[in-house]
Picture 1 (cartoon, rainbow, N blue to C red):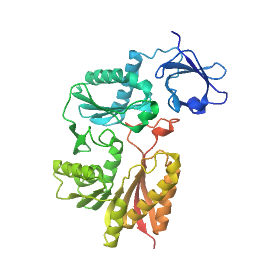
Picture 2 (tube, rainbow, N blue to C red):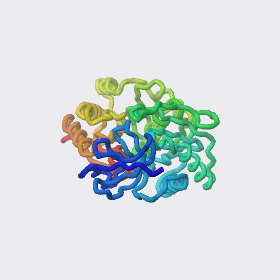
Picture 3 (cartoon, rainbow, N blue to C red):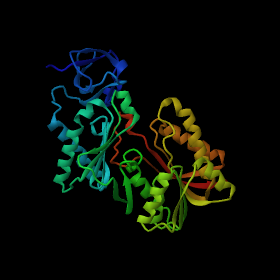
Picture 4 (spheres, rainbow, N blue to C red):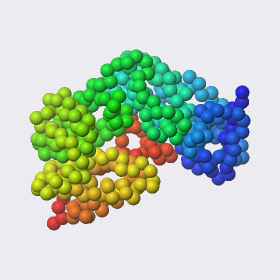
Length: 400
């Protein structure tokens, strides 16, 4: 049966033509031919010019997600293997592959799916109907490609439990793919050992995107007194500790996260110098300030305060407040590491917000470095959502 065609309206598809992967419902003039949601369709411009192929879902605002820019390529198992192999070869060139994101959706030209490798375990998150049909093929090809490099995968866990699946007309799914295994998986990153809970941890269990940012901050911490806010399972705090910090205090509102952080500290023999407390950071920092506490290094790694354009204004208030509080706790000449993981908090707005916080507490910031996410989370230009992490390290100086 001949493929159906999605034909764009005149003047639409600008993001697609610039290199993006998405076509929205309001960009499509008509769909010709028979199809089911999840099928591959050809995409043509209003004048019949071929733009490639993607999978369609009329239940989703993102109606077509592109798989190839070529009209004659067959998207089959060989095509999927090529995409998977390219993704793995890129990681081998650019990142520590002991634990890493091996497939990052649109940025690896496999839109709607993420696969993280934690040592010898894979965790998959499938978020789009069309790619869900390819999920098992992607995983089988990935196991094959890894085995060629001597890496045998002992288990796969699925964490397709995000709400966004509902907007694709899909149920939320969580559980083993294949044989069950112990879901507490030990990994090592930057010389730090962690137990990653792939079943109940946030997202896929561990935030791999901050790997080299943790390393960069850790280098500043030798002999220092360190405060790690929104510590989650303790990753920044433990990087500080492993690099010789005199003392580290990690703070998080999640009791589960704090317990995991304490377990990770014990795993590394750092429990004497790296301590954790369960508290709301926004309430805890003013208490520290009132007690006259000061730290050599303060780390702010908050969750995304905004996940939509509608809530950006409130997010700005949150980021300004937390940075203002953090700066007040940094000793003169000490260091502040601060970041935003929200795509909607664009780099210019985040920079402006941090600058306003500094002005509000009469501090001068001297930039040490600006960083983004690790290279295993590649930023694909024209796919704006792939660029989400903004990370600054500043020296904080008193105005004199």
